[in-house]
Amino acid sequence: MMISLSRTALPRSFYARPALVVARALLGQVLVHETDRGTRAGIIVETEAYLGVDDLASHASRGRTARTDVMFGPPGFAYVYLIYGMHHCMNVVCDRDGKASAVLLRALQPVHGIGEDERTDGPGRLTRALGIDRGHNRVDLCGDRLYLVPGGKVSPRAVARGPRIGVDYAGAWAAKPFRFWIGGNPFVSRRSPGA
DNA sequence: CTATTGATGGTC
DNA sequence: ACCATCAATAGG
Image (cartoon, rainbow, N blue to C red):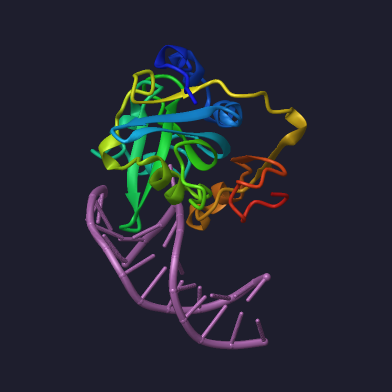
């Protein structure tokens, strides 16, 4: 099966919008990674929006550091970091240059190059299944190794929302419904009601 | 089935 | 000291 070429990748203008808009729009799109060992791809079925320096759940709220620098830059780049010493999380930088917002990719529906028994629900499993690690930090998603291509339409009725996972420390920001998933899709993480 | 815990390392 | 996590294990 042939997977789309990079020239069909979503343009930078797709990412140059507020994180909440991009988080919703990412549902149904296809994440593609061209690895040395072949192409791996999956449909995005769960995301979380991180809004900027005021969002206490966002790494950007601690200021611009070597780690968070990419979030403050132009949209359409990957922000990949290691969490709990073991798992990588992949984010997509969005909004305009200078606005530190991003969307965390939390779950995929396997499309190509992913093992039958391999799970893709949860941000750590997602990156492992696609072979994404810290070396992909700052990668341009408008390039030809790691990018997104358009997928099928997701009905607005199918989109579910809820609070983000694991951000209880973020005060009032923790309760805001900034997580999006495709209701009824069996590949969303099991902490998503209606999954 | 749910709840708890241990592994593990970069960031600040 | 703190985590945008996961898998294994213990408990009901």
